Length: 526
Image (cartoon, rainbow, N blue to C red; front, side, top):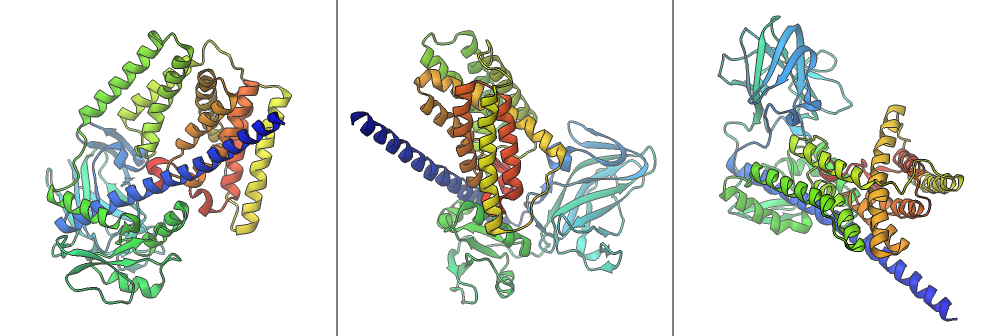
């Protein structure tokens, strides 16, 4: 009788912990989404008040799409510019966009591109990523050390069918195409899209007021229009567009994934809009006024990042050379240190998909540290038939959930190519090694409990998918299964196969409102 009561208490505690964890993960995702939207809106409001532009690009790889040149030319990212030597054929490169760009609100192109021989450039735009290309008429580059200024509205454009038309209203893709004589060299130092010369500036000294579409705004206020939960219609867009700039308040009553989809819908129909999170309305305008007063956000000095990285690397090295003698303390420290770097990168919102030199050193340091923790090896690559069967059961569960979601919500099945599946298997192998071999096994030594170790391993796995709430919950559930399976079987390949197959199935079948794009960290907002 007492044993049965104890079991009931344990199950009740476990269910409570899982419920609280689910709520906590959703709250974390919401707070991060709100913070990102607040920071972005505050920056845009401060720029609108100062008349400056958010659309400027340098010569660095992270500002150039794919970090390379498209076409037959030799490119070199020098310390102070991008140098491209022509082979006589046109070449181009893309300017990285984090969201759809309104060309009507930023119609002045300022290009810091210089050639040692007469050269011409063109602007190539796609209003939608899956649409055709709009191409401007060629224009000459200015002389050495002189910026080329171009009014986008004053130049001829051809649409995807080759007809002369008005300039495109928006850009989801933006490229610069160059034609230089063979042997000529292009030096690219940057570019910017600026506001019209007589653009009206936003007066941040006025009070911001929430207004429903169609209702008059109070005098001497900054009107901020409420967006309905169901999205905006054509009539509402016409009302919003009359504001300069249009400022909208995003409702935050639904799940983060639905808020993200609503944000995408707003930006696709009204790319000039500044979107303020309704849950941080006053804080957004307070931050905007502070940024405007100090002429922009204060950047973190680069030297501090390198000092922090050196400190982190030193701690990793010391933990391997002089580890604590207490097994529990040592195991806890090693698991925490192995996760600290990746969690800073993801939860801190620093991972954009474009890895800079600092992040390369961070990832390399964590990788070397994690590999060193895998030896002497108490795990194996392949597993028993039972390990593979249990791993397959997780795949079956994912298939049932994915199929149920697909039949309930409908929509097309997302096609995932073999190359993507193969890459994802390699990525799943790395993740399972970190979460199970490195972390879960050490949480087991620290807590002496398989259940607690599996929970902590799954929690770390979920946090590595911040701030995508649906993906965090899916990885938490999967992490519980995989960590428990690893602690039982100590086999890595079945887990990686199960992880990759389950993820591919869910991405292919689940509606966008569940997992959005399956992106994490800063990539979730792009």
